[in-house]
Image (cartoon, rainbow, N blue to C red; front, side):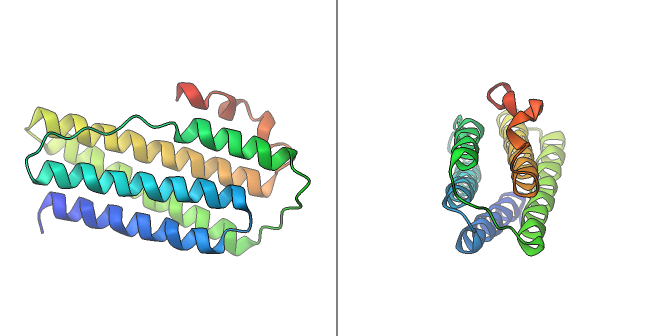
Length: 161
């Protein structure tokens, strides 16, 4: 299997995992965030497919983190009571592991690539996966400590991430 097929397969598995998580999400805000993550993974599939076909590819700018911050703020302000079990948190941690693995994969492929265009795209994809990891970290913090989550100074700087 070539590098592009392997990357496409990794992204397909990530997208599928997020879509399955959507079905188990205990709150509509998390459904929105997980759907956005799945859609981003689908966009990565499109980018890698174009690279494989030799077509100019570019990773689109995303406002995922900004949108997620807004959703978290609305969730916190709502009167909804949140009930998150350990199994839900374990799913977010597994998703984090997947993102970490993808980030490492893309960084390695960027280092190995002799094509400057591919190198740039692989580095950008690695940074996208890093943003996903960071977002999942914030989901875990939110579901374990919803009352103090928003005060976390790191999340206030998402737009600059």
